[in-house]
Length: 254
View 1 (cartoon, rainbow, N blue to C red):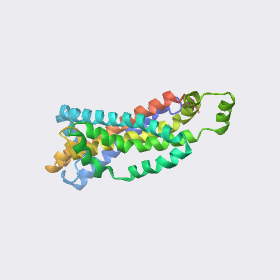
View 2: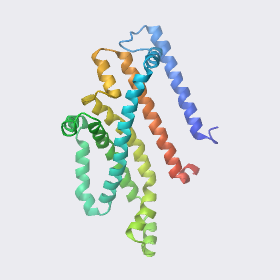
View 3: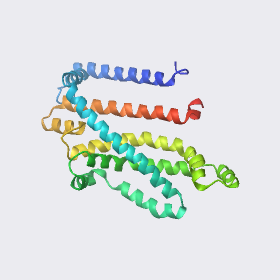
View 4: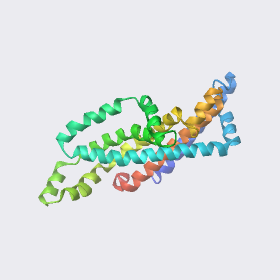
């Protein structure tokens, strides 16, 4: 199975390891008698999700949509910024330190500013998700654009290829694996950004669920939200792995 269908094998192995970890958690929790307020059992978390599945599904859907919006904006914006920066060494020396400096600012510190600027709707959550995720796209896109073999660029120059055609037919396809690698990192960061935004100001989403449950010391509900966040992260990452195999079939065959 591992040679014919590696994706199915990976899913099967991941599911098996997760089930083993949950069973060990359940057994050790019952043997030690730990209180649910400290560490709930997996069975208690599953019962919580089953009892209020419609409510949790609504909050999970809101967080997922916010994450996807911020992620897609980071992909478009990050590729455009990286392309502009990579167009000239002078431009890169001037703008890239500014990008690094902006990324060094803790996003939690600027999150309240987005609430002031954009209100309490979904806009500040999307903006924070974008801000946290975009740097990974910029860095990996720049790496991909700079990694194009010089001999290929020389052949394109000899054939008198126009700059735009060289970019779309040579530089961008060569940088695509790096861009996709950055996207797999950025999608997890976008999920973190969405949750940070919901922590600051929200009446919806899994971040809101965690904050409201924290106020009542409902640890089971906190773990239920964390379980859904992990599931969302896995599904988004798996979707990007599928996209990567679709767009770079030569790497899959290799």
